Each structure stands twice: as C-alpha cells, then as structure tokens.
View (tube, rainbow, N blue to C red):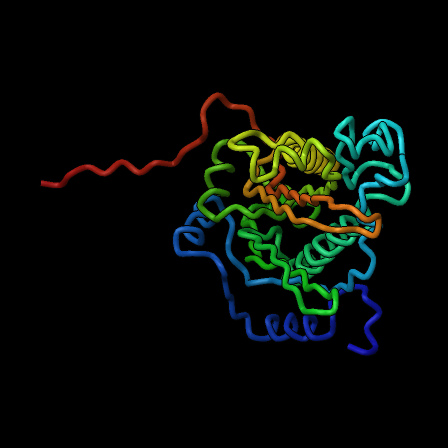
Length: 301
C-alpha cells in the first residue's frame, strides 16, 4: 500500500481480482430472491465487490450561524445582531455562500468519501468485466480522531445480452426490484445521494418556545431548521439525478440528525444534518404495459 498512488485499484483489491480470475469462483451478497430475480432478466451475479476510503475530516467549516457577524443577504442572517431577539435569523445551509459560516467543507468531505468508495467499488466490478452492481450498501464508521471509513459494497452482475452498457451501473435496490424495473421499462443507472447540514441560532423566540413553561407549542425556529435542511438535501439529490442523465429516481432512505452546539460566538445554536439516498433511473421503452414472461400451468389429470 505504501507505493500506491491512489489511482486504480489498491494492491490488495487487485490481488483479489487476480484470484477471482484464476479460480472463476462466483460469490454474491444477494438474497436468494434477489439472485433469482436478476437472472430472470438476463443478469448473472459475478461476484461481491467493495470500495472503501478512510478520510480524515479535520476541518468542518466555521460551524457557527454568523450571529455575531451580522451577515446579511439572501438566506443569510438578515438582521444581524437583532436576530438574537427573535426578529430574524434564517437557517444557514451548507450549500449557501455565507463567507466563513456554515458546514460546507464538512459536506464536501462526505460527498468525497461516498463518491470515492463508490468509484473504487465500480473499478472492482469493471475488473470482473461486470456491467453493473446491484444491492449497493453504503456505510460510514467513526474510527476516532476525526477519521471515518466510507464503504460501498454490492454484487457485480453481467448481462447475457450482446449489447453492453458503456459504464458500470449501480443501484441500491434489491435484485428482485431491479428485475421488476427492467420489466417495466426502466434501467437503474447510478446510486445518487444528497446531503445538507444547516445551522440556526437559538434566538429569543426559539428559547421562549422551547422553555419548560411554554406548554405544548410549536418551536418555529426548529421547524424552520429541519424544513430548510431537508429541502436543501432533496435539492442536492435532484441535482445529482440530473447530472447522471436520468429521468427519475427512487428514494431508498432519508435521514435526519439534530444536535446542539455552543460555538465560540458565545451562544447556543442547533445543527441539523439531512441525507437522501436512492437510485437514478432511465427509461428504455415506453410500452403501456410491462413485458412479462408468465408461465401458464395447466393441471394434468
């Protein structure tokens, strides 16, 4: 590994591909229904593939909301210092341009981690002469000291057809779901994801609504925070679907995590991280009904 320049397969993965070529042994992470499903549409499981990267995230961005700074502008703090009295203080998202505030570098690091793991997984699939990877699973492990491991794994499949795709496709859908999509005229082309991190200052109105004496009432500041971060993550997801040249996408999971921070600005903020994962799709035929090959069983008496 010391001589590896980061391009192509890592030496350990390259050796595993060489063993695969010598032995011809096929492995799969698919369930029995998944493996049977892809074979009904002409895709044969070739082998399990994986890509990973350990990334040090040492700079997440300033992390504050910019309350002290009095930043103004669309989507910024707006009223500056007055936002502390409940007169303003819109949510700052990671996709916005707010100078030193927000979590843009942190989100960029997440995109790089997932993207690199997926790319290395696809390189393994290409080394197996596969056409796609089905049942992709993405995971992140915290290794301590701001280090995280991003892993992408799945089952490489090869088409029996003489027409081969120009690049390896990826999907987080199960094998049987891929078969249903193909029969309905849709082809999975890529695993796509959108991520956003937003921060909002706990202004006077937010503190009052969240206090023990407020009773059962909406905390409008927190509603705004989660609304903005989810919307920004979905927008990021849609941008990546378009970049893949797809006509649509199936969302497989949506996540949200909210935490409290006390930045060096000397007040309390809340941070929300939202994510959207799914598969981008392209249509290859527009028949009114899906082609089927049902087997008619007649009783023999």
